[in-house]
Image (cartoon, rainbow over the protein chains, first blue to last red):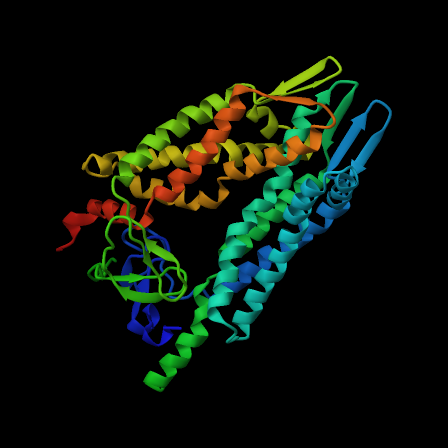
Length: 213
Length: 216
């Protein structure tokens, strides 16, 4: 790592705008270019991360317990939860689609909960675990979070398309709402995270060595 | 801001918004990328003629969004009964009871937010590319466009489509309407438009608004 040569804005006594990267002297309140509030570090960041995280988790539980889809054919009515629907697909010879659904609706959301929790805890404990890997993890979480909405869109397409009067109909179940909320809340949780905090332990050690502060 | 002189920006520096590393600003050549050495966030990614390209692509997106929303998107046929839907129908599928909120947000995520972002980009970029003063409220517009970025989900809807199609092909005959192909092109254009744009360059050009106040 070439980190020995890197000086942070905090050490230089300046503050960078997180939206437009304009640099201002420390103590400037809002960015004169884009109007964003300038904060050297967002100290309420972790509180917001945990708040959204908990709400997201609370929505994720009913999302898995209630049915996502209600399929009505001539003689039967079938209600499928997320996992149940995926298993159904798997046994009906579409293992690839089942894998996409499972990946997007179970693996990604759960992985995201763990990843965000890990990042927040590691920052709270001033972990020195690889900064680069944790930053990468953060970027992956931010990027991949939106893709969990796939399942909602699948439900939307299916339930608008398959409306064949008496023959067959697919209707969305209550889980769809909870699942969408869970995705939105975890996205907000990831967005609240101030990724500069990951790197602070490293910079602080160096800063202390230099200034004896 | 009230009693003292307004704070002066430091135009020779750039700070990585993701990890707070500070660098001396050197503008990369067209086609090059300035990347944070510590966390590898792309800071400046200029492209030659990016402005014009983005405007052209944006106009195409506006036309396609409007067309793709109204034309039939998919048609399903089972034993003589058929049903065809547009994207708007799909977005508004959750229409009963509390699910209506989900309907509205789905419509926003796949149609209105992508459309709004493109319109905002046009509003911001057209004066800049024509070397005029930035339009009134440009910075607010670009700010909104950036804030909406994670919530524009057209490409995710496209993958959702693919999954839904596989799910019902053995249940019924599905045929594609014109909107399906428009939407396919649209998704590629939306992603391209987003990747062409160098945020730093746009903010830099909007800076011109404030020039009279500064001494540079």
